[in-house]
Length: 442
Image (tube, rainbow, N blue to C red; front, side):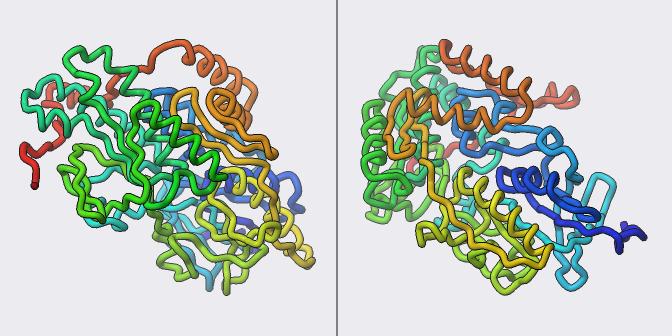
């Protein structure tokens, strides 16, 4: 599809990405832009995913629809286009994407990258072929199904070595995502095991590998230690200073040469840029776009970046902003001011934000947090963490429904339903069986 004839009259601020950063920026701009300026939000999905809650989907603590919110409910005057961006033409100032109606060109005056990052499974040899990433809602559901498949298969296996390998789940990475998914997974297995009477408790194990001196390096040391103690109490093996050097279908080889037998390896480390960014050639560092202090992409006037995909200096701390929801929201608010200043010909301001606190879950109804200097752990931290994300949900009705369902689920065991989205035409087909080697490579 070619540009419309009235493109010359359009003054678009185009935002690519419908996550925390993109939707918050659209909300901040749409009420303040003078005509003929308008906001166009382009996203591959029609919803925002609350990525920090994906671990709870893995552990069946929440339903998948609890961690997503329809973008059209989050914005009112912004034009939303569901499209996969394939190209950015900076010379013609066009965003090119594939929509439900075919190819479309969207002109822009200012372009904001807010689409997060991709998982970099090439970081460790064998990880791309044998590990499961946790970046999308589909990843979380797939991991949950795979865990249930593994436990069900243990009941059918007689070989003790295979049973141990099936029941050992290894999580690579001790940051927020790794700690959250390892904790949720351990609690899920403990809750679900009573429905699998032929599986012994000692046949189920979770190991978290952290190539560093402590868990949660983004948080104060005492909270990282509290998270490690919480996990150790529930039998999670916390391996510090343990770097994964090779991932195979039978397990993980550490840099020390030690081999951990496991049929399921979950990857929470490594990021790479969106393919559009790679083709555009903007400067990146460890998968994130380098920006100036005011969040303009370095050496690319008119291009801006915020959120997980951006490496934004924080003027208040002198350090780089962490890739968290709190900083994504703060960057969006500051960028809205900077874009309005750029439109008016006024100078922009560098991004600066003082963290109000940081939180992480360590399992179902367990967490650690530091908020306004107050350190919390256990249930209070977990409740605070849940409350923060509940407040981010659009519309009062959605908030109320999710609050009721979350409260109700606190008093019952996790759901062990294995969701297979089978169509009528597929009903008689044999279920796919995940491959599992029958012998150890050692």
